[in-house]
Length: 537
Image (tube, rainbow, N blue to C red):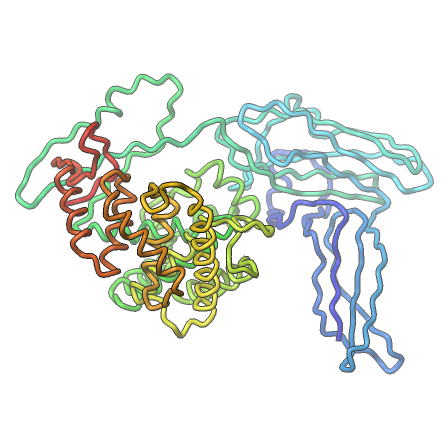
């Protein structure tokens, strides 16, 4: 039994979508069809469960990616007695005639770009032929003409024996093109080569969303003016969509917001947990409200065309485009938007995503129980508290249970790290003169708030003493803290047997809150009227 892997020596863009051969003859010259290289995966995959024959030999068959480069072949094998074997070699993929485009990683609207390509001749004699460049819209695969000189689309060339030659093309990138697929081919008669790839085209614009809540109670009639739309004087603004959303149940807005967390693109600890958190909420919501599941199943079975199907085939391209061009994800119709949300709320998909993200989160956790932000061995205290807080909320909502041993292990290790950090910090602060009355900071308030989710976990005597000191200071200092910190202190107090302090904080918040027909209750500072978050009545 063995395990083998191929690793390329240079980076190559992966997962290029297939090319529609029916478009080859649309609007271009009459060169014969040429097979192009499209698979630029960085590794060659084959199953590692291999058996030897009677001679002790293993025959390995697999398909190499189509990048013309040098590869490193590594093989490691062992038998049932744990006898080991290792070998390493180099493999070169090449053709007698090859053409390789030196394309940028992305383009931007309005760019004027000179793209160069390299022809290589491995024959012992000169070659004559023709190079052709074809360009397509990467989303719908319709031909586009971007060359400043149309005659450059087909260029004749002569190349010496065992030599290389460069060829260039000048392009102008227009607005409105979201992705560009190029097909570059070379033909000398007995030899041909070509490559096809798709690169994102990023805009020079930024998406700005203006919204206005319109709250109307039963029996009321109101008039609303969208002043920012009426009085717009911008010379560069390009309007995208105008949407009116109506809902009798505001909870539906929360349901629609969950996919935002589900689709976080990065593999950092914070976004891994956010994806797990969102999938956990969604799974619990659907299990407790079968009617919602019926609605999603009905949406999912619709006949609407999949949104941007060519874009969905290439995850790397999709990620780059949607980060820079978020409006691409906007549904072309209401039915497509519903279908997309329903796909995200598929129970099988959510169960798989939950397990996958929890496993990744466990791998991220450091031996001391802390979490790094992105990677490495640097413990990030805030990210650790953020993950621990979210797990506590899942326990509090009874979405997570003690049956989930992986989550329980993650929380236990992280809680041990945070407790040790509080003890260590207290030792440092004891050096201060006013130790008993020192000012509360955000990190301290947040840490004890997170700890309040785990009242079932007993504190050791040293930590309990530190906590009692915090409660006493918080009882005296909460009036000087920010609104967010006051909220954390209130929850910490009520969970630890001090409801009177919590009632005093709530009373103060209600006295300083502002109200309006448009926003409902808005918490704000008494002096200055800082509006923080609209909350419906």
